[in-house]
Image 1 (tube, one colour):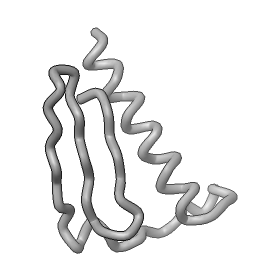
Image 2: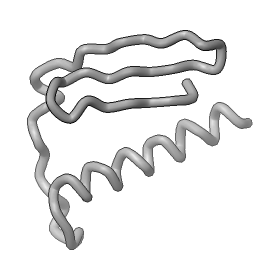
Image 3: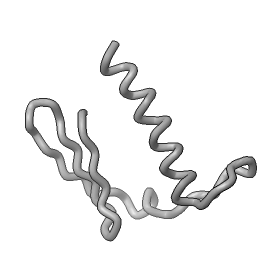
Image 4: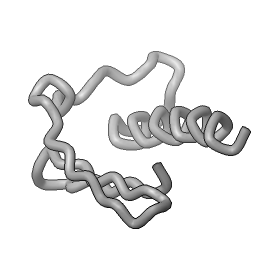
Length: 66
């Protein structure tokens, strides 16, 4: 996995790999429900979700590079 693109309107995720392949994934409605913000986080729900995704992608990137 090298590229991710989220659709803001529909629950769709595009995943591109390093070989030029693109996979379209339709997310479950349960995954599109907004979560709760941690009590110690200062910001909006969107910022909190983006922060969590960045942390996840950093962890995944370590496994791909190593």
